[in-house]
Amino acid sequence: MISHVLLFPLLAQSPHRSAAVRREFQRSHPCPSTGLTHGACPGYIRDHIVALDCGGSDSSKNLQWQTVADAKKKDRTKLVKLAKAQE
Image 1 (cartoon, rainbow, N blue to C red):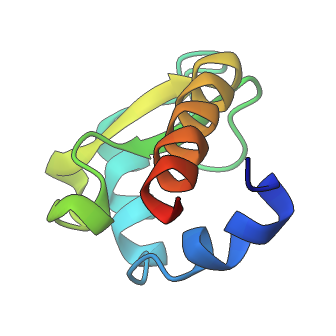
Image 2 (cartoon, rainbow, N blue to C red):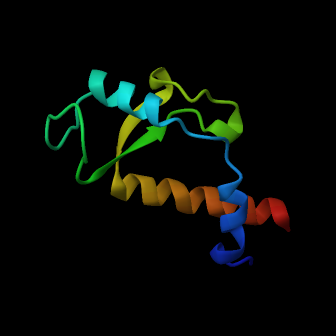
Image 3 (cartoon, rainbow, N blue to C red):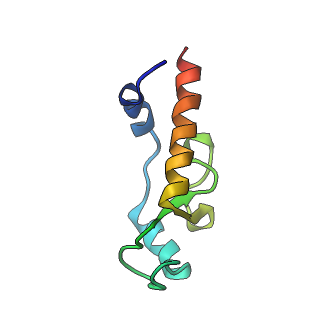
């Protein structure tokens, strides 16, 4: 099995993420934990519904709030798939 450390360069190759898109998303979708339309959102991240490296767009329509715990699960799943693809 390939170490997750070796896979980080693969994850870093993901397409560019726009700060303007993140701001636009949060203005129209306030943070679930604070209700604010700007700033940090404790316990949540902005997640692309269709991953950029799977053809998804970097647009506010392709973003959703995701809990940090769910994001970690999704990242682990992606790492396992990348590792299997490298074998």
